[in-house]
Length: 135
Image (cartoon, rainbow, N blue to C red; front, top):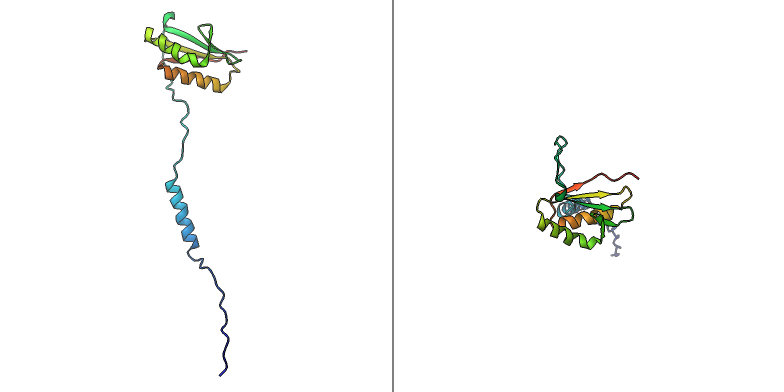
C-alpha cells in the first residue's frame, strides 16, 4: 500500500458576510455619533414694519468699538473686562436702559462678539445694534 499525499486546500477567509458587517458598523456609528450644530448669535430682531419710537437720552448708553479695537462707552475709553460691571451698574440705576452698540467698518469681528458677550453677561436685554460708520 502506498501512502498518498494529501493535497493542501487553499485557506480562504470567508468574505461573504464582510459587506454585512461593514454596513452594520456604518449604521452603528451613524446612530451613536452626535453632531454639534453651531447656533450662531442668539438675537431676536424686531419685525420690519415697526414704527420708530422716540427714546429719552437718559435711557440710552452709547457703546462704540473703533477700528483699533478700543471700546468707548459714552465717549470714555473702557477695557473689555470692565464693560460687564459698568453696564450692570447702569442697568441697576435704570431698568429701561438701552445699549446702543455701534462699530466702525473695520472693527474686528472677535472684539464685537466679545463685547456682545459682556453685554449679555451684564444682563442687558435691550441692545440696539447700529449700522457701522462709513469711513
